[in-house]
Length: 98
Image (cartoon, rainbow, N blue to C red):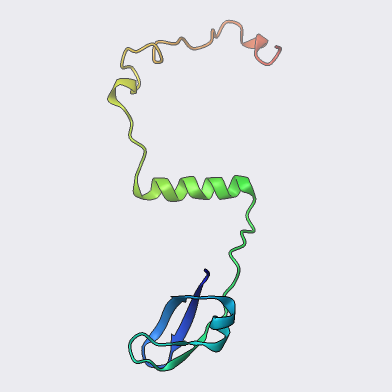
């Protein structure tokens, strides 16, 4: 069943789970029992592209919990990932020719 928002004039907004037909008639406020009308709701439609949506999700996830970096993989730690040599500088003319 869908969830609808209702507005009580004295106690503010509350939510109820009910059918569409029942929501059109309104609902009683859980605090005072006064009739409350349903609030209009906007559909949850995203206008962002999938790439922007993924980037926004990554930014939100990393803002409160930064990624943990393992101490064994910091630069100059001695592991195989850090021992890789830089490309030779004597053949710079070959870059991009592959």
